[in-house]
Structure formats: structure tokens, C-alpha cells
Image (cartoon, rainbow, N blue to C red; front, side, top):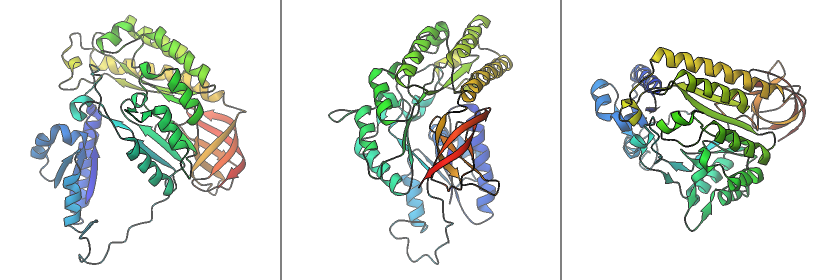
Length: 393
């Protein structure tokens, strides 16, 4: 069984998911295997997809019970798997360096552009016991970093148990203890003094906060709060609580009604904000969202041009952030051991997995999963160059 996990958030992700399904069908069917489609795109458009792509064998959406039942029936695992012929050799997978822990799902903020509530429903927390169980399993498998994810991680709380500060403290106290804890996707109005104190005590100095825009008028049309001045005040509080912090954000260019002046306001903001990284998206109207029916839709070509200009401005600002690390000591979590060139590849605490740059360390014979103490010597774009010192197992 080849399983394709799909995304239905924006059109580019939908197209990529369908392309991956078609590729999987060609690959799997040529080898006598089946293809299962799971995830958000299937959850929202199952009937249409099934009609258009009959060659996909199984449609599961967000409920994997059907997939698990099919695997058991086919002898792919679980009870009753015995007696179906010789086991297929499974290649050995490397021990994980990072593990993601989902602590919430869904969202009830109802931002005008966002389809997540239409796909996943209202905000729900994952119980503390389940988060801790998943964390123990990841650490036992060798993970050194735990990344907490959700649509709004700053909001996590379990009545009668506690909030995010207790959860972070309990995760940090596990044995073996995680080297790093990282929070992704903190909504700006949830970044308060209590959260910053919890991050400073238990997590890496990294704040991922989607600001989306700096014009108050555009943010109101998005059904979001704040403006550029509010954002700058929040960033000042973050930096006071977490010296040397890396701040990542996301922005939308070309939202309906965005004027030249409002876009210039956004450009001026990112030039002042001192971000370490940011994702930039041209506005992409999603079926069923309020923004899709707003007047004054910005032409796609103009939205794309604005997104490119904004991305260039962020690259310039972020480049200065990474260049300023030169001469600073860094702990680097190695993801690829040193090769013949003597260079190991990993990340420092200021870089999140998958979405940020990497750190290239010279002069250390280290393996995947080790930590090396290094000194930053320079940067290229979002990547850091460093010279090694001591290493830890």
C-alpha cells in the first residue's frame, strides 16, 4: 500500500497532492500495490476526487480506520497479519532526530481567507496524557528535539490539568529528556508574558507567529486583530524575554482590496521588524471562505508581483539576522554526519526543521543525532557556516 497524505489548504498544495497521487498510482500499480489517499484534501473533496481519479484504490480523509482495516486484511500489520506468506524485508530507517507532537487540531478563529475550519472543524486540544505518551515514544526511539504543533499552540490548555507552561515543564522532565522543545504557530494575541516565561524556561528561543499583514484595515478584512504598531510592540516584548530569539512569520500579499499604500505599509513593517525568516504567499481564494466573495479581488499577476517584492525584502532583513551570528557559539544538532569533505549538516536552536535553513559544521567527526558545540563563522542566505568544537553523544 502506498499512502499519500494530501493537503487542501491552498490551490498550489491541492495541485501538488493530485500530482503526487497520480505518480503514486503509476508506481504502485506497476508493482501490484494499491494506493490510499488520506488527509485534508480528501476530507473536503472526497466525492469529486473519487469520481475524477478512479484509479486510486482507497479514500480515507482524516479518519484512518478504513486504511488500518485494509492493511490488517491484507496482512500489512496488526492482529491477523500472520500466515500471508513471507515477510517483505523493510529497509532500516535512521533513528529520528526530531519528532512532531500534535497538541491541538482545528481552529475556530474564522480568518476570512482560511479553509482549515471547513476541513478540520473547531479547535480541539489533544489531551496531555496523549501528548506525553507520544513524547515518550519519540524519545525512546532516539529523538532529540520535540516540536509542538497545532493551529494555535499558544492556546493549549486542559481544564483541571493546566496550560502550556505545565505541559512544557512535564515534557522537559521526561527521561530521557529532550534536548530541545520548540513551539510552532503561535497566534499573536496568545503571545503573553506567561507564554514567554514558559518558553524562556523550557524551550528554545524561537517564536513562530503568523502576522499575515501590517495594515490594520487589511487585517480587519481578514477578520484578524492588530496592526503594524501592535506587531512591533509584541516583537519588542518577545526580544526582551528571549534575548537572541529567532522570529519566523507568514504574510499574505494581494488580499482583496489591498491598495498600493497598504502594501507599502506591509513592506515598511517587514523592513523594521527584524525577522529571521518568513513565508510569503500571494492571496489564493479558497472556495467557501468569506474572502473569496469580497469585492476588489487583486489580480493574480499583481498579487504574485507583490509577494515576490515582499519576499525579497524579507530575504534582505533575514540575511542581516543570520550574518550577525558570526563569532557566536552555537549548539548544532547533527542531521547528517560529516562526509568525506569533513562537513556535517544540522541545525542550531534558531532553525526549525524542514522550514528554515541549516547549519554546516566543519572540523568535527560527528554522527547523526549528536550535538556539536561550534562557533558561527558566517552565513549564506538562511544557512549558517560554523567551525566545530566539542561534541556530545
